[in-house]
Each structure stands twice: as structure tokens, then as C-alpha cells.
Length: 283
Image (cartoon, rainbow, N blue to C red; front, side, top):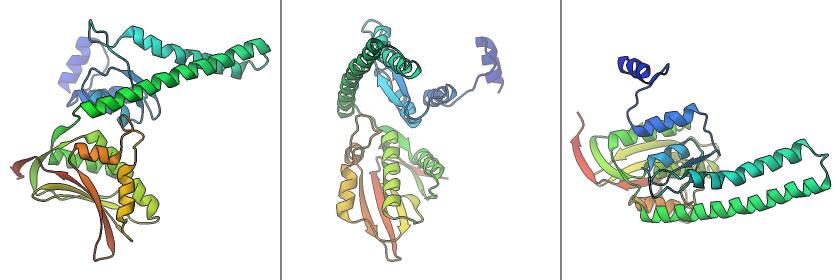
């Protein structure tokens, strides 16, 4: 508290908040300015993955604008090249909506703006999607995480979605994980199970054995057949960077999913991730 008070005074603001990482700072900053689902946030591709991850965590979409090769910072000129069609589209829509009595010539002119700038933006977004796919194919998005940190993060995420979680780690281990991709997959699996098994009580059990970390979705009712699991793996996740499949995200972490029927009439959909480092027993 003293540090926050002194730092706020030093930089000339009323309040300052100390956080544990730059990722947390980015998250708070985006929350503070009101970024929400389906917003577009311009950012740089020449950065750590958390820059885009925090944007996606809030449901917004990162728009990568190239850097200036001289400064390595995001290029102001290229930002304006992207913003110009967005501004023109907004102006055209507002004028067509607020002034319906305008002359046919003006009406036609604004409609032409809508068509042309929509084409320009479609081409720009297609180029961005292609760049994202290249990034996903060439970049290593895996982070080494301790199981205690990983389990706590996943448990909070699922509990916020009203899914009960039981965590039973007996030891501290390390695994390489794309945390954003993992959460996307877990969200998709949970929503798919709820859709297929209506009215069930779904929970998640997280545990470790000698070689793997398991995230088990458990419910009472019929299990999901292998053919349906195969379709799940082939699903392209809309909010993944580059719209890649569940299988591609899991493969990047060495993971897999499968369905099991238990003896007690319960079913399980298991997501397994390999253990990379054993860090010893927890006290």
C-alpha cells in the first residue's frame, strides 16, 4: 500500500495498483477502459503472447498492425491505414441513418462508400487471418507452468462458468501449456457436453498420475461415442488465433481427449497433458 501511494504521488496520479506481472497489468488496463466482447483492439505483433491473450481473454479481437522497422514500435501510419476505412464506414452508416431525406445522389454516394470500404476491410481481415495462421504455425506459444498455478487458474475459470471443480494434486510438477488455447478447448468441451447431455450435472476433476495431468469432465448419463469425439477434435475454434482446430491446439501441447463410460453410470470426457518436469512433493 505504501509503495502504491508513493508511486502514485511520484507519477502525479490519484491511484496506483501494484500487480504481479505485466500480463495482469495489461488485463487491468483493458478492463479499466471498458474493453468487452467483440471489440477490436489494435496492437503490435512484435511482442510477448500475453499482449494478445489479455485482449482475447476479455472476448475482444486483437488487430495486429505491423511495426516500424526503424523503431520496432507499432507503425502510426499503418494504424491510420486501418482506421480510415473503419471511420468512413461509421460516417456513412450514421449519415444514412440520421438523414434519410438526403438527395438520391448523396444516398448513392454513401452506399458506394459502404460497399467499397467493406471490401477493403474484408481484404484486410483476410490478410490478418492469414498472418495469424502463419504465426500459429511458426511460433511456440507454450509456457512452462507449475501444476499448482495451472490448476488454480483453470479451477477459477471453470467455477466462474458455474462448473464445480475438484482439484487433487499430490505433488508439484511442471508442464508446457498454451494457457489461452487450453481454456478455449475446456470451454468448448464443457459447452458441447452440456448441449449433448441436456439437464445433467457437469463437474470437472483435475488430477495427476506419473506421466500425465488430467482434466476430467464428469456427468451422469451416456458417454460420448468416439465418432463424436473425433468431430470435437476437428472443430475450428472461432476465438483461437487463426481459427485453428481443437486437435491443433492439443497437439501443440502433446495432449489428447477421449471419452470413457464408468461403472457407476457416470461418463467422463478426459483431456490429458504430458508432464514435463517433476518438481517434488508439496508440503
